[in-house]
Image (tube, rainbow, N blue to C red):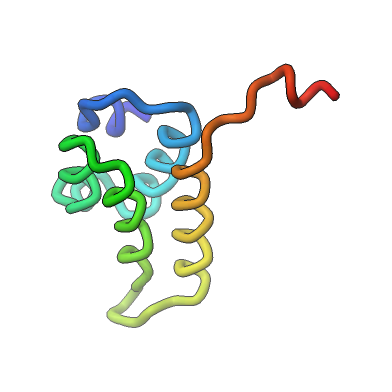
Length: 90
């Protein structure tokens, strides 16, 4: 979380923050720091940043199905507004 807090200069909701922390944990702080995703996010292009998650789907030069799934889940989380606690209590 500290890496995301130090590099992201726009306001995030909890889902956006959580998705970015998960991504950063998996790709590493240096890759996140130099990513197009971060550049787009800090410029206010949230949709463009969300679209960048899918680019981080390779390991050893090959597209990995597990990473495709993981990045899709992170992008979905990033794009969804957090559910309020009141709606979870029904």
